[in-house]
Image (cartoon, rainbow, N blue to C red; front, side, top):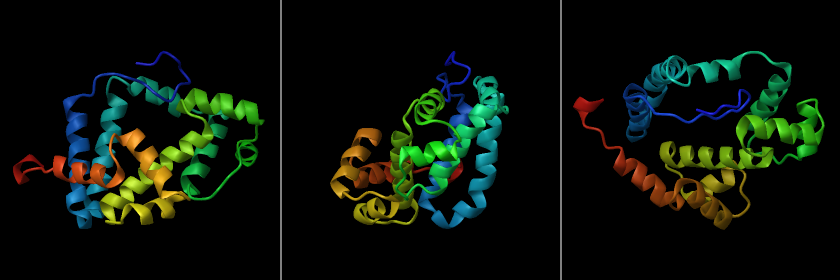
Length: 183
């Protein structure tokens, strides 16, 4: 568990029940038509298990109101909503109503990433979602999320997920085959 009360990251053992809920959520990628119905209750279960689990206190501290954190969360929300748009750090600092260096310091304290690294992570995770749920090819997914270079997308995807995009998706689909009795 991370000791920094403002840190957005904690480490610890994942309880079996939480892992099971994540596996059931990921198993929905085999049946995308069921995602709209099945995902919301699974996400509620995951939230419940996270908040009542070993890291629950840490998560509750993060979620409590703090004007400085709220401004960083506003910047994070903007990045998530407008992830495919280009943004300068100065503009993001304006959204957060703070200076650029303060934004970098506080953003890094919460996310353990710079704002631009965070945006790249959003791109990679959104592209991965598109590859899984909309069966896009890597080129289409890369361009849709904001990459200008498919090669860069492939390289960064491999760095984050351990495999090139299509192999990663193939492994996710093949590795998450769940028997009907297991769901």
